[in-house]
Image (tube, rainbow, N blue to C red; front, side, top):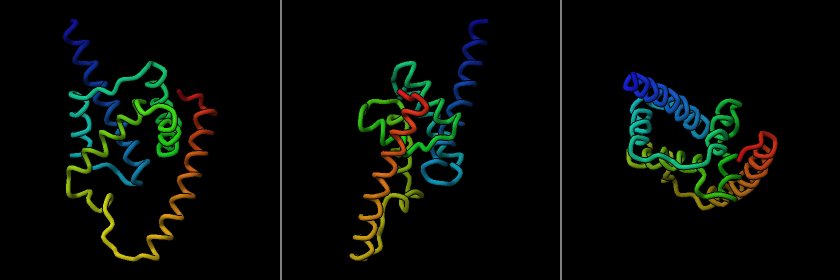
Length: 145
């Protein structure tokens, strides 16, 4: 009977991880996650288990449940706690993507334009400030730890 409970627990864990990575990917990249990447993410959790407190794990579940802005909350967490499980999970996802050439275009810009680069830096400076403020507000409003 114990073996059955363990199998059910593993199955539920994989379902949760599947939902989790789908939400993280969609929130960060505004598209559906490819099945191969989803499988790699779930498999990675067999080897790397992000550690955190019960409150931190609940915070990740709240972020998904309430469809919060992952990028904003991640920035707010990063300012306080570099070991937060949300940051660890995002790192796992990004590392898996960086290892695959299909995602090269998401990380590298090969266009050469000095003026465009200056505008992009200015835009992203303001955008990052906005996301940080939004993340702090979301942390406070939803009591995320």
